[in-house]
Image (cartoon, rainbow, N blue to C red):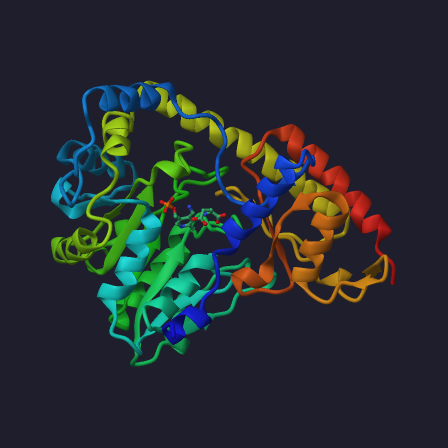
Length: 396
Ligand code: PMP
Ligand code: GLU
């Protein structure tokens, strides 16, 4: 008999859709893949060179638990651009920031405490909280609130069991970004209520029109209770190389190190060596700038498309996702199949037009679907054509 928690979580929806897409593509089907959110812009050449070099120099060993000091120092330098002052001892590396967020849920709260998340949330936050034996305290957002929570909402919803609020800006799945003013209000509410903040800043490089603001940069009191997480998966197209980091007070980093040393042991040594002198180099800046520009073009194009189709859709300011509201199609049908919810919508869209997207229900909001946009522009154009054709076939 397995633990009851197994029945309360699901396979990550992002990987379930990716498996389906790969199966179809292996059969030769031309799928437009707006499913898994990963950047496919090619690995920066300096990272490839360094990785090859590391392999030739026998980098097969375990690294230090917190990660290579040189890499942590380069991250501490890099974070200065967001007004964050951390030294290498304030930083830990791990096999992906996803695992660090899970570790944080375990070290910041006792079983039975509350994890505060906003809806829509990124799929894995929810299941990680369940795995950590936490209860969910969900702050609802919608198109009307720009998919953002306010400090007031946090104040009104906090209970004596709430331990942390997890914020993700630029956001997956909506692409929205919190402004400095909005973050200040949330920071005040967190400080007033004694909450920790997990600030997932994995998309900090992906900003279109406004600057990324880290909540931890807004004052010493909020910095002391914030853990910033980030990584190389999105910014450098190496999601499979598993390299993420967390920056926080030394006490929190030491606690994370205890968990990391007993679970993943350390971040992959080849990935660390590959990225050790990447951040901030000229090649790096132009690579990232180019990738972000591609995502911005895609986001603008597809946003215009949805608006033209009369679909409510908040315009993304960053990350590489868009979250249109498709609830006006619920009740319609295609070939005798009725669309009752976002799961039906996404399923039929894949069956009928071979366009992969994720139902909003996986993110806690059933009226919408999520499309991941870090794909070639031609794929976005083709995807829009296919979605248009799909919508035109739906009958009342
Ligand atoms: N946070 C968000 C919002 C994400 O979309 C992802 C997906 N990669 C992660 C964290 C985890 O990233 P990684 O583990 O690859 O660092
Ligand atoms: N973060 C990506 C997404 O939301 C995929 C990778 C993952 O889920 O860990 O699609």
